[in-house]
Image (cartoon, rainbow, N blue to C red; front, side):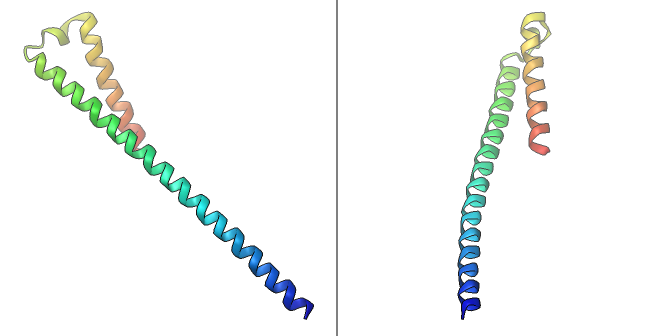
Length: 88
């Protein structure tokens, strides 16, 4: 009789622990999905910015300039870094 009560309590306790862990894992998955979506959005936004800058600078005059050309380089580096982070 006592063994049955102990087993029932143990089953209830383990069921509660599994339920709580399941909720915690679901929250973590949702958070990871949110972060991934933000990273993909940032990557696409940065790529769009570089594309628009290249369209504006169709002759390449700004891109070859020292100061403004550095911005083109920085955006390309940011795109490379974001792509590397997403692919990891």
